[in-house]
Length: 416
Ligand code: EPU
Image (cartoon, rainbow, N blue to C red):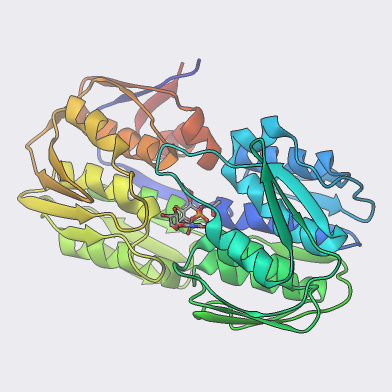
């Protein structure tokens, strides 16, 4: 099993280019099942999760070719299966995103139920509520979930919570439903807008993505397109925190700064200098980091996917910080690991109270989920000694060889 070793590092300095967003690439790859002509996707990040969803597409009969670096060609003209294999499904929850496209394209889909995961139980009731509203019959047996419909008909669907995955799945199912679908209280994440733009390039009629009400007029058929995935705002945020925590100076390239407003605002509150221009952001860490508070919320609020990285920063910021996690019910798994490194954190329900300490100490720790793993890398950069991070397959799911970019910025980090 690979491990990542992180030594206390000098202030990180230099430039880093951000990859395409994992959480845009996954739904867009799933949506590629909808088109009947060639689809070319550019700026696709090279990640384990991307590999898995490509295997899912291939298992359904799509032709998937990896062209140049970051370019994938997909042709789904001849998809001939409607069941996703259990072993692929169990590896990645996002495989569930093929349900909407299969339902509308071939009228049936069956997959194993996505299990719980480290960051919460993550139910799928809202996805199913949407499919039912469009006229699908849902049947659950022996851990499998099937959705069937001779024809889907548009409807008005209110999401009780603006779930990213449910908005995407329902949007994909609705693009070829008869008539009009409106998703109210829809998620507004940039990844939803990217998916809608891609669907429209294929010939769909989706309006309002990026607002809380998305209107989809069904069309008969979708074709092909070339599309570039938007930059990963969470990878960008992770390097911004790296500049802050090491008191360094990093220029982050290929970002859409309007997507990372809460991260910029909070880094400024902590004392960083942040300079933004359209597709670049420069973060200079202060001599002294100040405590701040964050509350995670659906977009445009502070992203839950940046919560653990900010917590690492708060561990070494002067004063008391409070983190309130409102999106997932169990996303504090990194707290015990950070405490092993000398952090002073108390949890009370969905809140964590962090008392800044002067320094952290290296310890053997485990990446309990993807973003928790990133937080441990950040903490390791400012801990005395050598931090050994295990279970790094979680990190590889969302960061393409995370150590390579850090090494270029001067970090002492390596994989063994
Ligand atoms: N929820 C329900 N019912 C549903 C669906 C969701 O109650 O049917 C609840 C969940 O339990 C959770 C909340 O709604 O408490 C938010 O879940 P959401 O559906 O919005 O999340 P997701 O689609 O499963 C995506 C990202 C996550 C990111 C969240 C929130 C992908 C592939 N994953 O997950 O990314 O944290 O949105 O922004 O897009 C990550 O990249 O590390 C990651 C976990």
